[in-house]
Length: 114
Image (cartoon, rainbow, N blue to C red; front, side, top):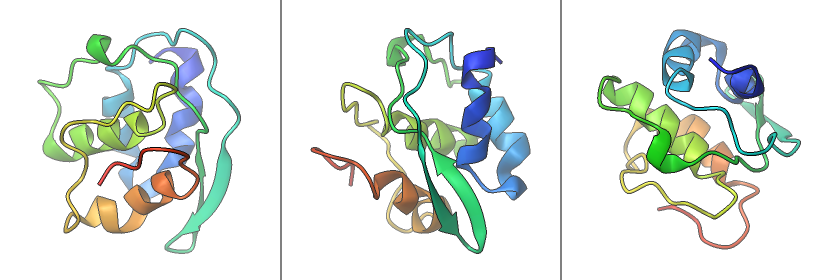
């Protein structure tokens, strides 16, 4: 994982750490460092959501990831600086969407991925 992506581990609960690390392995070096994030409490745990990401979505290859790891990538891409909305953002009934996914949208300005 590129060092500039390491802070994104804190964007998810500790229970998802293994999957988050696998998802972050697919992220290339960002074009710019991520803007400072904001913290929210999810299920009693503080997580830090990045304000903006500066990665090229076309360089993120997810074919080998599990479904959950692809959902993690999609959550992160909702914070993309160009308001990129992943085509398969977590569904409303997915557990990740009900907990962490909602936190990613709490500070979003403009288009919200639903």
